[in-house]
Image 1 (cartoon, rainbow, N blue to C red):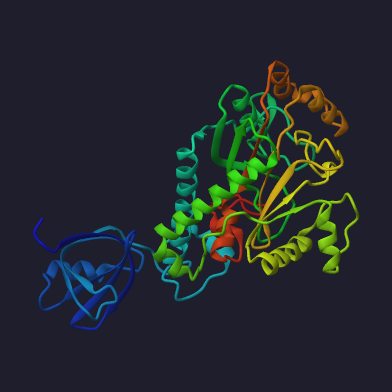
Image 2 (tube, rainbow, N blue to C red; image 1 turned 120 degrees about the vertical axis):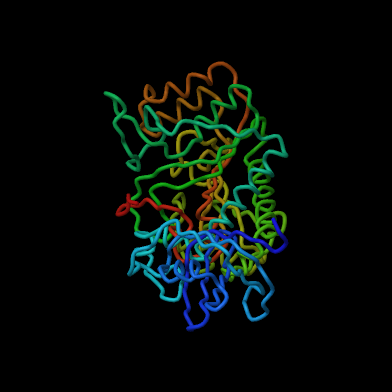
Length: 425
């Protein structure tokens, strides 16, 4: 190609016709490109094609790119050819230029058009960098990526937050968490594994942080001494991933107005039952042995921010009664479980901790939770034949992105969200 030649492909974001000159702002995957057509200089074919264009038409423009200080990007493309891929219908159902704001439901109804706005695309570039940062960090430390089933033949947890699906002539369930199969991978001798993929919960929740389908980065590791090993592994991964985002996405973060700091080492830890005392000091009373609520979560976040200057903190040793059968109890005080949540900017983003690896204890806890042991035999039977200590965590990717970028709703961090009302597009 001759010097200065460029091919630009994308959507016509705006057309300005000033009579003797026409400016086309082309929205490409790399940013905006200004295509300038001077009617006294451009060929009749170029002028004729440009007169047919509508906003959001998909085109390819080829020509010489030259400096122009009056253009925001400092350059303009003088086309020698414009090829129309498809013409867009008018009027548009929303304005991808962002000049006319749209409600979130409208944006999600017309998601592909909404993604043409630079801010919407920037969210997913940040999300991609976060995932890449997690993947890089874990791979460098010997964790192996795995894929576990999304379809379950039996519920993995008690409760009603399950989606059932027809599986040939049987009933199956969409997984709530890939944890149990990760544990089985560890039992197979894969000491350090992780998985990035979807999970589902049929939650009857109309909040800005809940989804029916969400993505997680789920980690499991063997031969741990306690749940503190999982906390250290998660903290290191979070810090490394945020550092990668900050390094890779400066332009996107600036566009979104997101100011993120790499968190300092040693996230604060709040343990039960001491958590109750902290809440009571701030005027919130919760009965001993009960889990805390969303209001308490925010109180604790404010407390940690004021005392430690941290946006992150762990909550540890939850009441065993509030946790699933597979968590390990504190042997010195069985009322509490070696179960851990990570809270970021006032919202829980992950759950994890140490798993129970002893067959007899597992079976006793299943009965205590009033679950049918036969429904879990596919999982528990492997623990009869030798098991290491193990633990892990599952972190919600979209929640992290929402909180990191200060988005108003977690649905903004999902390409095509799924909730109680939305199953299309």
